[in-house]
Length: 292
Image (tube, rainbow, N blue to C red; front, top):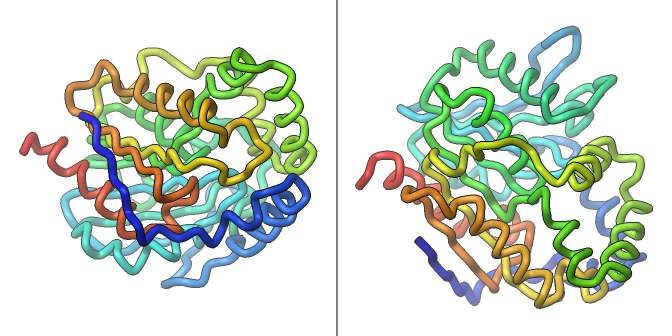
């Protein structure tokens, strides 16, 4: 199912910082620092394998939503959305992966190890079933990984403008020189971020696992089609966005219980730019799960 939302109220406050590589770098640095500490609600910590993990645990209900953030983002990334979380009438758990937010660093960062840490966190919080995973950007990989590893626990997946393992490859097929050059620029900005290196390894591998959990698990995907968030990166060009939409659609092409929402009025950071759209997209999963 394909839906197209056009929301005139969508914020454009991030676009200014993404027009040129230098400003883009400053924006990313500020962004990571801004969302490194929690500012909304009560932040808790739990010790897992000798390291402190930051998390927030609010609400209650039949379902438990588990939120995964993008590269380098801590739990406070969701502060704009959290005031609306009570409308889900569910338990909501938002945490920071190793080295992000107020969670302590780990010696090794991989999707597999992040899954193990999240699984231990949820076990400690007595969350064993009816899990709905919400993954934004790079967090989409983590949501899919968890659903793949623990299908018996997961009843739904919501992917908010998620990263895709084939995106860089498809951009290079489109125009190799430009795509490679742009990726080198971004790599220069983020090369010290461990999760960025994980993303580069995924790009090099060009695959994650089969079968994709999004083929069978009720899934909602939101794709931003807004053009020129940065006017130098090929990924934000018209052709880049066409590839982005296509890859997202492929994730659910075999799934009869899936919805693809496309918007050109909000950018990649839609949980911040439009919390209301984020809430509506997340609530869409209920009908898919319950076959309403």
